[in-house]
Length: 129
Image (tube, helix red, strand yellow):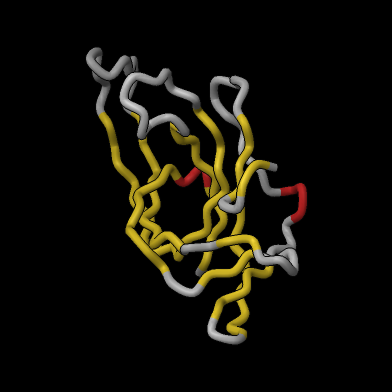
């Protein structure tokens, strides 16, 4: 199953003394496993009560936006563990001419809401939106 998810990242992470510049980027990945982790109450983690975290192991796709207006990928790359709340939807895929073409019919229904409600730039793998 291939999923579409969004995650924030520091666009300036490679520059040693640059201030953090958080942006949202769209990713695609093969869903491998879902984990639930029970975290006990912890003053060090600022948890007043126990919480359960849900995480997903995904194998990231090397997706790029094609000139024809479709996302496509030819391989999966590194393993990532993500917050399951960042998964927007599952997507279809069709193998064509040596690449997988992603079929996404979710439209504007699939999106995430950032917890802090802060200002971020929305990015797709192919560039800014």
